[in-house]
Image 1 (cartoon, one colour):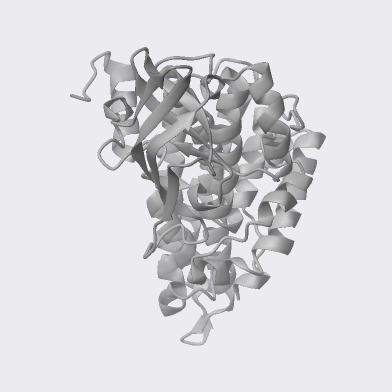
Image 2 (cartoon, one colour; image 1 turned 180 degrees about the vertical axis):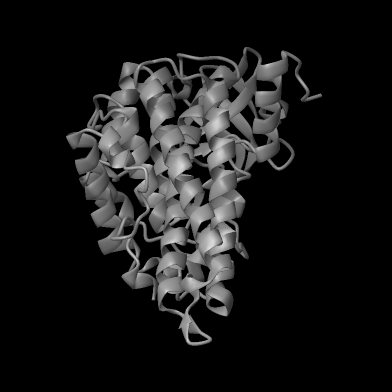
Length: 394
């Protein structure tokens, strides 16, 4: 049963002893998050997934152990290094992509733009409460007709005296229905700007999206802004243009490239345990050559994915990581995580399509992860431009 399969259990998932590349603090943070996931998420997440539900109280629980905005300095944030943040994302997504998505959106998409581009007053007002989980944030960039091309957004903010008035619609917004504050990006006469929008502002509505078959343990919403009036100091003063939202997306993608390894690892662990216990024709299916080949391929992919993640994490920490390298990691690790989950599903046979095991849940979730924060195709074109010097987006 899924409740007995804990991420990082006593299985050979660390074949290359990547653990030896981590320092004591990084391992402690990883193990703390792993324990939280094992105790709080795994016993409940299949039910949350089936019900399409994410308990809001998880925010304060994760804030209490320093997970929210953990890679940021000051304002109640833990100030960890990038590798530690990535390892936390690995463990969270080994539980469920929806749980990691919550943390990514809160820290990298809602808190980070305030931390990086906000005024000191904005930072003091919002970040401590967001770090503790008392205030939940969301990130309003994607629109119904502007996903991979955010520069084509139609949401517009216009000046009206000393105020800003925003009109527009945002789509596929994680945490939208439970958020207390939204960081909304809009066209202005000066260029694209970010705005801090309390969700109780008149004219702001969040409509949850239902009938999802992926990321069900996550709240996804449409945001409608109809004449939302904000004071002048609601605008983020530190950035104008696409640099603002794209830098936030890079922060989130960094967490995803670690996280996808966790989803793949959990699927592999489930398949390995099942193969050693499932008996067919008088012996465990793990004794058959075809099954062993699948298990080996999965193990190799997970170890390679974690090596790539740690390498990119070290580059992030020493300031040499490029956005193209983040695209490399996000594209490759999500793709291979999905491949591992699909292969694991085949080992579990009919049992693999039930929520008694975590594999179909991870497989379905990764179908969303491969699309959001830059589709697989977009990251491919980013890398294509990097190696040829020729943009192919138009």
